[in-house]
Length: 506
Ligand code: ADP
Image (cartoon, rainbow, N blue to C red; front, side, top):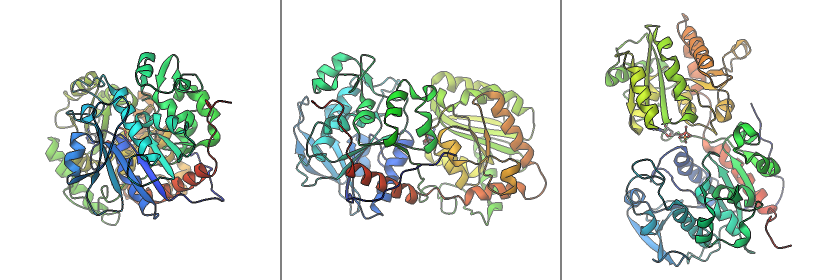
């Protein structure tokens, strides 16, 4: 497991943090970023910081945040209408601002894509506007009477913020967190021109990447500190295999690149209190978990069999997640009559179709549900014995952390956050009692199958072996407290030693 090495020793302590993201629970979610942006800011508030979360005002976010009040109105270049800042009107330590520009954000469906799955044609304009609004707030020019010490940006949708702020004298420190390097926000030169970004940003030291405008480079190049969501992913993205051509830049910034493992929100994901599951349970009452298994089997149309080993998988159905490997090995897995599997997800239509077809020959033992269903995700975590995550790469991954908490033993590829959070069961880890799951070393179907077979064999051992393994996972602590404290250290380092602006005039 990789270890992170940042420690803070001296300097001023930042108090006011502006946290910018394109999605955050409970207002809007498409993936793990929303989990993080929904739970890290409250964890930072617990450290007595004044944290303000800023998001675009999508219709779903407005609906869930009502009542709202307008706290400021701004003019932003390139946008005909005045842009309002709406604030969630609740008594909470965490302030939530929504950037309301109806021509950009008031449209149905997904924040990033049309119903067909195609990115909105004006995403560059939409998120450039969001970035400019964040910059106004960051420079105390939005009329909020508040000047943050740190702006914490997340993923490409916020990438222009560090780039634009770096051109200012009296600016807050900037942090940029990579949640997934493969999404970069790439647009053509004419978009750069149309966005009226400063000319000097069009260079290979700036936002240009292979003759395209790269939003993510704004964060990677200009932020005072770059973080990503696990120590191993922080190493991996400095290699050609995982770096998408940005590995040289990331390597160059390695002294200011830190992996901070995501936490999970145990208010939402805890089998002791989970209202979505049939039967709550703890490590001490692990035997009660079986009630959830029988209920899940019934709900999903599987044979109700407490002795079958039930595998689960939840996630976006895209190549990254390695779900195609599950398709490849399903016939072999299913040869064992005591094996069942339940899969929930949506994404690539071809993969969805291929999965449905792969499960068809095994009614009562294999079921695939296409869709997005939070409550069902909780019931799958509670009801399964094992959770499969064969991701080809995984910046952090959340489902293996939920699985550990629910005593649902994870089977994972040794990559990114999966490598950092699951300890493989082998003679050494059995002896020192640290194993929490099954880890395989290469993202291919044969390695996945071998790990699954190891799990089946272990599950079928007489005695309490399985329970011991599963409950050890339940006892791991992946709460946000430690990660939030680590971010605070990074904020301090960023405030103390601002990065040089690589495109500043000499
Ligand atoms: P990523 O951000 O790459 O999609 P993560 O594992 O970091 O992957 O986070 C995914 C989050 O989205 C988890 O909270 C997971 O439970 C949830 N999720 C993904 N797909 C679905 C789905 N079809 N139904 C319910 N929850 C889902």
